[in-house]
Length: 102
Image (tube, rainbow, N blue to C red; front, side, top):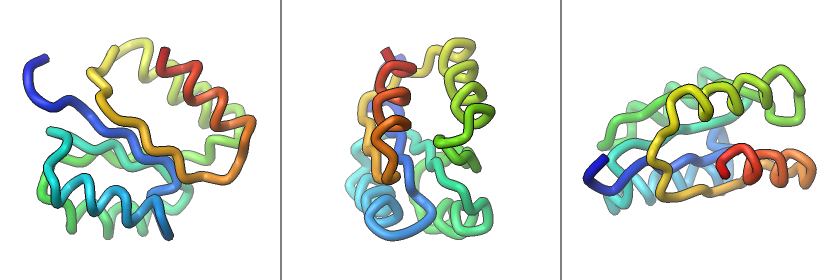
């Protein structure tokens, strides 16, 4: 893939995750942003505000099924991830997301 790649922002449905996604969008540091969070409706609100292509992933990365889904998605699509911003508050999930992205 040419271009700036994909930014993945976890915890994007509120707080710092929301703000990081907005800033990445404003600065166009990525061609696409994957917003990850538990509250789909908030992620949908956020996606309307972003000036780049957005993929909504309504997941709770503490839950095994959500993590398994994300890991499978990454394995299948092998996206060009250029930036990872983790703003959810679970250390176990943080580590597992980083491992899945490798």
